[in-house]
Image (cartoon, rainbow, N blue to C red; front, side):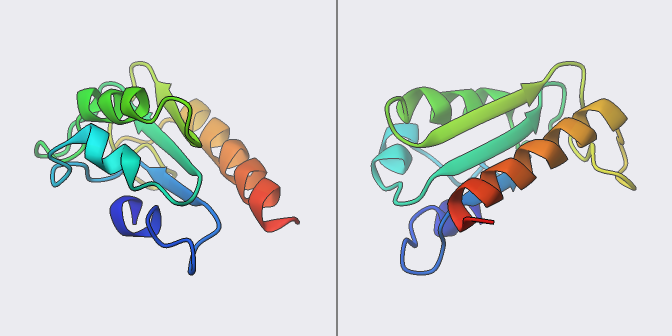
Length: 111
């Protein structure tokens, strides 16, 4: 979703990515240059799911996208999978992420 959706302005108005897989993004600058839609990325700072969702990569993407519509929100002391029913449920992070998701969707979908 993060990689493909952010480059598909004909099919997506915005991308909201909850602790997305970033392992296949080899170059943050190249990724940022290809952004075509706004991105909100939500990530736990303590989370790493088999090396695919590193917080360092998320931060590199945000830095490379400076000046572009890319927002990174991180949650300290929060693991990957912090959603309700997830393996590392964090109620505070989950509630904040849900609120931010709803606001971002409303902003770009006009509802």
